[in-house]
Amino acid sequence: MKIFRRPFWKAETSKCYVIPMSVLFVLFLPYPIDFIYNSECYEFHPLVLLPIGMFALVFLFMPSQYFYVILAEDRLMLRNGIYTFWKKECLYQDIVKVKVGWAGGRSLPYMQVFTKQTKKRTWQYVIDLVNPKSYNELIEDIKAKGIPVETKRLECFTKYYKPGK
Image 1 (spheres, rainbow, N blue to C red):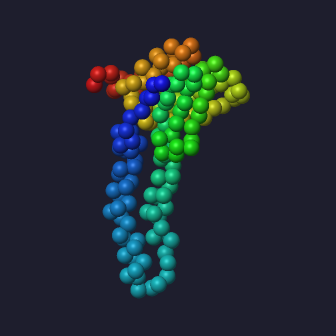
Image 2: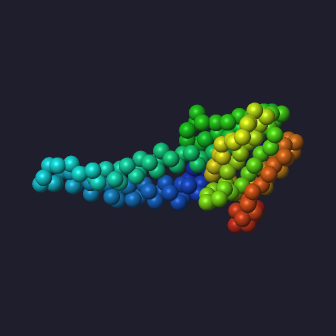
């Protein structure tokens, strides 16, 4: 069994969104609370909930970015590092092809697993918990299992993360 995973805090989503949003939330949270308690007119203003709502949306959406890959003896597994119940398991014999790459406007790589049961579309799992240095190794290990791997614009991403750096 081979696990392709890196720590939560090294993921690009954590660096770019989670940490800055946490800092902003901590800095701006006192203002709505102060406004509520020190307001002379005791009327509630909906803009007070704006920072709290933004924080909640970010932290409900961002865990969908944290998938990692496990290659077992007989199956490929994609697991979410935060929502542990969210996973996809496919036997190697059922997999038709695997696509790894960048989507149009995304800044993070994804993985799609096409099986014999797939009719038209499959979910694009954002594999932000996989270390970019190990993408080439991941692709080679999947190919070694006899599964065709299609890469899409992955060379744009791997040129910044060369193995050994």
